[in-house]
Image (spheres, rainbow, N blue to C red):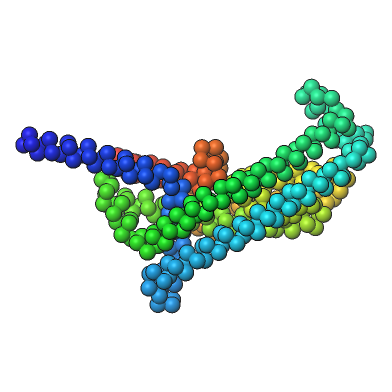
Length: 350
């Protein structure tokens, strides 16, 4: 009995040492592995559709799905990076040309309510309110935005091999999850001490939140960004591609979303005297946002995931502060799985 107990202790120690070593080996690739799981779980129904509709085997279907995912990520990314860099430079040049002393004086220093409000704000900030100060502030802001975009581009170019390697790892893992998904899932479930029905519920919630975050919010964000971008174009705002792309990504954030972009744009139109254009653009973008958030997304998502929008907002912002950009996906996933475990806790312990 003593030998058996000693043997068990040795086995458990060796097991956890090996588990720790495997974790250390996988840790450098944890982000592509997690994203591979998110993407594979989201597109697994497409794999089943190809197998059923065209009588393809699992490997051929997985290859087609991976090819579609590759094209859907790489081609738009290359185009957007080139276009956004061009438009960021064009925006800076536009502001530099148009922010003359006469125009700033007309916009900000004529006798009107806005100029009085700006003077009070600058007084509170203990900054002198004059043409030179305002011009320098705006040019510095535009220069910082342009510099940030170019820094990001340079970082991508510098780390292009690292990025391609991580992307390759992600695509290989997506293919592996698509081909061997059921076996990997069974292996993970067998390692867990939880009952099978509870484990299945956790996996189900994981895939449901993947679908909502990636597909539901993605399509909703694309619709909001494109329609709002069309409104910007009609309003005569420069750098349409830059603002449209920004709104597509910001639309992932509930409650505030694209208003982070279109509210300042409407204020800009108001300052330069396009009052009706400002009002119409504000109403147009607000209506689009309300329709997408309160009608399209609930219809699209249906009863898949029932989670409070404020909790989603907090989880996304918290996720981004902890994990960076991937936190847009990690935050809601963690919140959804946490709520699932809370429900299991209530169910198990009444």
